[in-house]
Amino acid sequence: MYNGLCHYFRGRGRIILYVASLGIASLLLPGGRMAYSRFGIPLYVNKSSTYLIPKDGQLADLLRQTSLLI
Image (cartoon, rainbow, N blue to C red; front, side, top):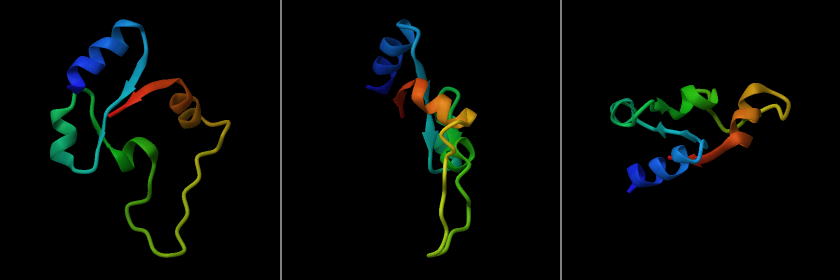
């Protein structure tokens, strides 16, 4: 199913991001990456950990332009 969605969006020149929680899963997706790597999420968190994507940063721009996140 995701292949069909990807062809649809890519055929219209849209951006698709492939992310996975496990390394082996990211290898199965075309251009896939680990979620922590793509979004810069810390690997080790505790109850006081926070994560912020600056609204004027490159990652925020990429997310705004993304049509599909798998």
